[in-house]
Image (cartoon, rainbow, N blue to C red; front, top):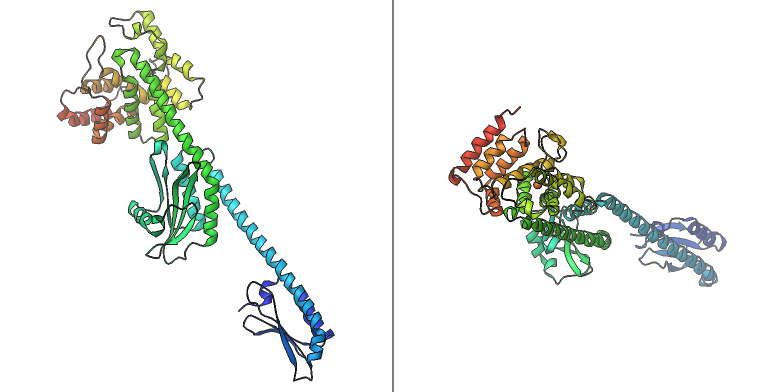
Length: 479
Ligand SMILES: [Fe+2]
């Protein structure tokens, strides 16, 4: 049941029209709703037998009309131009008010969309991690459209698959992807569909210049209502606006890889200068990463630690191969020159705007806990975390690699040497982290992949040896 009063904000003209028709033209007037029920009625006293006619309102849906009645057909016909004028005026008022309502609704919707985008933009500013960015956007959209679950599936660095989920298991994702809508030919626009089990899905493709690169899927489980057209529209708009951000982040991700590969190539060039240190920077980077993982360093920082590891001997590029590979004892001057390589590293890296922790890691790996290291003689936690990690990784690789003046030491002996340097040379926490990295089977495999040539006194007893050494490292007091 709908009546004109439901759609008219200002009913003054309607009331005036009824007064005019009833009082000036002496008509009986009844306003009816869509079901013919009287909403307003004005009768003529003393007349029972009236001639009447219905004048419906012109509106997209049925909202009733006005029934006018007069004592004779002649009187009604004379009044008709006035009646039609009133009806036409009411119709045009209805049209204007409907347009106004639609514009208001659009404005409200636009303002809520802008509000959402502003909120998301604020959260993703400065985030250069593609996965984190996807997670924020997924969470925000889910909250806004009240989705129970959702996932984003796309490609990341070197076309690796990235899957970001919200309250969804892998099995649920697989079954959602197999359901009706996603089995259809790839669609280029946001759609709503219902799964066979009645669950509502909202699917939005992620589009970039090269075409569709991924998808966002939102799920609303029963008994909640299915997604609505306005929610679909909102997700469609968001997708259009954030797609360029995704594209930029993907490019940035690839650029980071390019940067890392350049650093690796540079490290390989340095390692190649000295046949005895071949592969040293690569191994140090990997050992450092294994230590970092044990310390619970998060992903992005682990990448930075890896880069610092690759770069740690960059300054050796400025030192002659004759000194670096000299089989005999170094002269005092030669030793002083080698000790300068962290300073050269700093000079090479300064012009590139690297995060400070990478630079510190690369230039502080010869600093020692008691201040006897070089180039600055830093002490304790005055040495950066990355510097303390790389120091351990660097010495372990140096000890387990062949040198012009000695053979490679067995792993056990190298670890004992590290243990002897606890607190005086190396940070105890870093040594313990390295031991627990070696104790985990996964890392042991990784470590032997890093250096196939690692020698052991007795690999079968390595775990027992590591446990004993760890206990020793935890209890020993070097002060
Ligand atoms: Fe070094």
